Amino acid sequence: MVWSVDETLMKMGNSRDARLRDCVVRLERGGWRATGPGEPDYPWRVDEELQTEAPKLMFLRGDPELFARPAVALIGTRRPSAEGAGAAAAYARALVGAGFSIVSGNAPGVDAASHEAALASGGETVVFAPVPPDQFSPSFKVGESAVGRMLVASRFAPQTEVRPWNFLARNALVAAHCRAAIIVETGARGGTLNTLKHLRAMGRPTFVLRLSPDNTRAQVVDMLVRGGVAELPLVQTDEALELVMERASQISPPKRRSLVPGDLFSESGEE
Image (cartoon, rainbow, N blue to C red; front, side):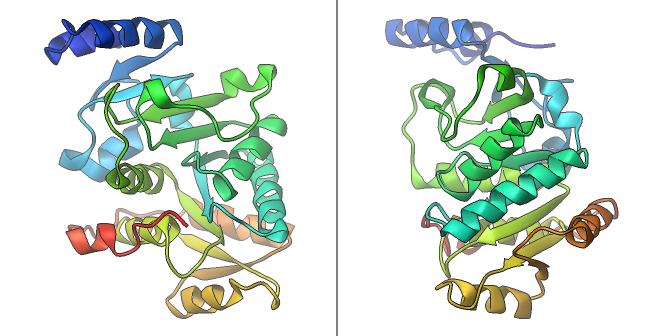
């Protein structure tokens, strides 16, 4: 069953608010709809991984069939270097060419470069937005022919305030949906490292790109590799792509542990 946004908000008891009803009309005209765990259009990997912690309500725009595609997450800083942005685009193009969709969180920088390159290459992308549906705007170019190849999902109710927690909750959804993740470029603090904690807790294969020695973030790569994150070359190669594909196909049920508040907020800044 697919719920209309209006039906959903009526169930929530909020539909008598005139401003909210106006918002509902705009959302439905914009193609948004609502779903929940157990429904056929709900992201099943999120449902399976997060279980009772999965969002009870999610707003979607786009083809929910994209949730069924194997996805690789490309994540990183909002302010990448030229080599980082170029590498994000190159890996996105290679992965969609190999049959994967790209999942990320609509932040400027690495997220935007990855989403945009996937669509420009004829591929598909899943966007987990950190904002309510009525506040969503893509951080990347979306050509007219690419609209049907992009699926946007938000767990946040319309007309609610965007708080720091939104970005952390978004990170968990990206980690749950992907089969593997590539950290393109990141600083020593920020949302990327928060996502890494989720990836580890969920048993997702995770890679980091080897930046050039003169990149100011190269030391962070060393830190991540020492911590067990697999290394990939900055310049995408067939061997690197094959390694990601191999690891992504070998996911086993993770040994789950509960995340504590410190896990969520220790790297809460959006770098």
